[in-house]
Length: 350
Image 1: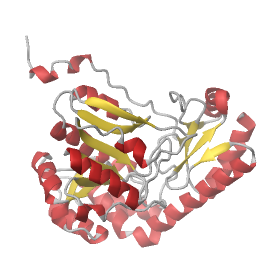
Image 2: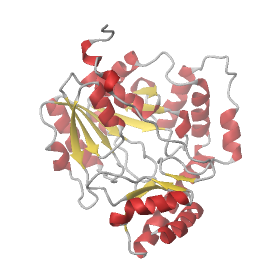
Image 3: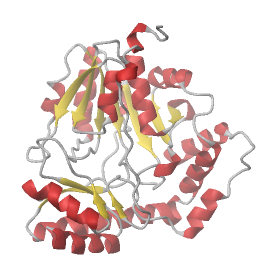
Image 4: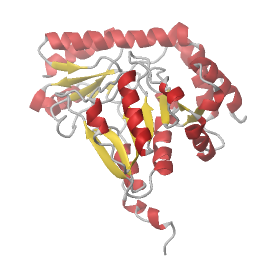
C-alpha cells in the first residue's frame, strides 16, 4: 500500500541516529554546548515558571525578544532551535533536484534534510589549512541553487566573513533568486553580526539560538530575523505553539539575566578558549578558534587515538571527521579552570 506522497515515499529508507548519552560526571566537550552549569540563582529562576497546565504566553515572549534584540516583532519568528528553520527553509525553497548550498563538513542534519526533501546538496568544502573566501562561496552558487545556509562563524572549521564579504554573497544570492540564511549560532563569542543586511536584502535571514552563548541547549529555542518576505512564510508554516512553556520561560529568564550572569559567563568561555588556544600553540600544536565556543586541534594521524585516550579518562571531544579534517579534534570550550583541567589531561594523552 502506498501511504505517502510520491516525493516522500523514500523516507522509510532513511536511518536517523542519536548521539549516545555519557555519564553526567564526565567532561562534555563534544557537543558545542555550555559545558558547565549556570549558578543556582539562574537555574532556580529558570525552573520557577508558570504552571504547566497553562498554555504559554507567546505574545509576551515575542515582545521580550523584540526588546532584547532591538528588532521589530514583525521581523521575528521563533522556532525549536535553528534546526527547525533549516528544515523548514529546505521545504519552502527547494523542489526536488534544486540546489541547497552549505559549508561542509557540518551538522549531519544538512545531508539528512537534503535527502528527505530530495534537494541537491552543494557542499562547499572547508579546509583548516586554507582560508575560505567569498569566491569559494559564490563560485558554487549556480542558477539552480535555491538556498544557501552559511554558519558565521562556522564549525568544525571556524570560517568567518565580515559584513562586506557577506554583502557580496547576499548580492549573488539575490541575482539567482536564492534565500541566504546566515547561521549566527555562535553570535556573542566575538563575531560581527550580519543583522544590518536584513535592511538591505529581502532574501536574507539571520538565525540565532539560545543553545550556545545563552547556555540553554536543552531548551531547544531559536529565532530568525528577516524582512516580511521571508518571515511571514515561516510564520505561516510554524506550529501554533512554537516552543514549550518551560522553554519559553527559561529563555525569558536568560534574557533578563543577561547583564548579571550570561554576558560574564560568555566572557569566561572566551577567556578559557583563548587560554587553551595559545597554550596548546605554545606546546607546538596546530590550534584554531577565535570567534566561537570551540577550538580545532590538529594532533595529526593520532587524532582518533588521542580522542579514545581522552574518553577513557572521562573527557569527550569530537573526532572522526572526514578528509580534509581527519587528524583533527573539535573541543568545546568552557571556563579557564575547566580548560586548564582539559589541557593537563590532553597533554598526558597525546
